[in-house]
Length: 426
Image (cartoon, rainbow, N blue to C red; front, side):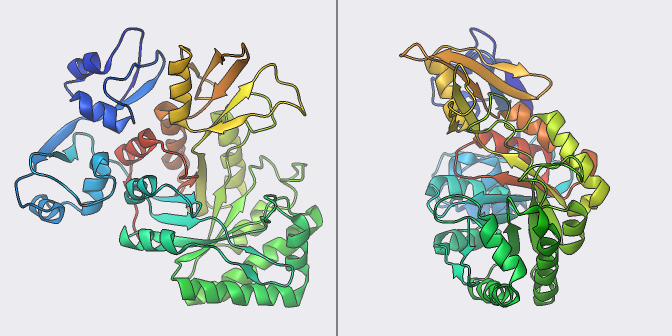
């Protein structure tokens, strides 16, 4: 794998000649149309096929996998054109293996809402260990707010991906309720009912484990929250269900702020089987323009977490989105729009903006002026920024990556991931 940064005047055809790779493969791997104008500063993933197969009449994908001794999952990872489905046609060229062998094995989790686009879901599932439908809420009496997760669960099982149940304090109004958390953490009857309902749902729906995400927990509820997680682990582990907890991006035990004080890293790390570090949202909807997950900030969170929690328990959170801010930024008034990496490239192309790369933050960005003469600043993720984040996993000995979220198309990410690592299955 090579990550090529486009310079002025380069085209898909010129890159095809440069690397000896078909134009169609470069375009497909990077979510481009042919012929599509490239943007100066745009990162492209170039993969080098080593073994290819031309489909013969009457062949099935299963037969081809068997012939070469590879899994269907590997064929789906190598051929995004399949979109995670077995349909093939005579004359079609499939990549059996690429020149670069992936390195160590890691776990990969990703979150998805029930209304996720079907093609994004099926294309992405072969790159996952876990799929986490978002989200089960609960009431002040300890009853679960049901989630329409049947489609996601069926798709995950069909792809050999283990589903995780997600429990949060998110309300129908769209915010995390610290009052609701307070009730569940301090009312013994409510908590007992909630745990019973979780155990029943895990068994009823065939989930593999539980992912708990209580955000903005009151500081005085930090200890009760860790004890609640301990209670879940004691109840669920004997039934075969691991418990995972999402952690705010803290950099010290004494860090102030509503997002941080209710999360005691040491206590939570001891209470659960694994944790997800939510290492994103430095650049956010109402904040000033900046990278969503600047690499130095991510490192700070990981390095603090490692002082409290074993590396083997830690999942690194990775964002699959960016933001578009209108300028000038005015605190309390300016609101950024959340966009995908593909949308960011389309904006740069439309407004003829060159893409820059911040070497410190390890993130791409650009500015453009729209039809109303409003200047915008865009920060997003590309192959370079994803590679920089994924490289932290072996550097620190972490267990894997957790993506928020799958709802936006980002084919480059999955190419970088599968080029660097083998993806664990359970």
